[in-house]
Image (cartoon, rainbow, N blue to C red; front, side):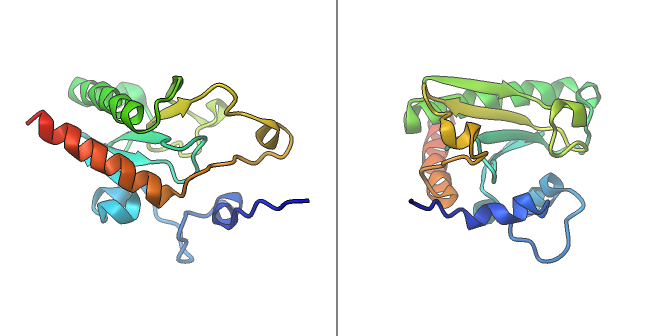
Length: 170
């Protein structure tokens, strides 16, 4: 029998933030606003939103577009923030296509506990690249995701592409 070691998931299973120092931050997304981009896997900072990798991804390249405004209610975001969220989602798809050539995407919000939101008080939009067959018996039977690349490697690869894309639009 082979073993799949995933010790980085233990804080998640215990309901702790990654890199837990013993105390939970008030909001993991608000914490990222003033933090080091590489340490927090922030790919881009816009006027009203930022793009970060999901620390507990469904697939490699699983990103989130997060407004700076702390709210769990979509209807509380101003039009400028909503527009930037969509623009950053477009850019995220372009970056993912250049890096991984996904066959499709799941994009959306989980608003509220009943909808599966892990962070209820600070909404965020998921962008999950998908490939045919990316959900296998490990996920269905073992309730374990197999992610073939370390998140730091994913971050560095996507950051280079994102920065090049941004520079070409300036």
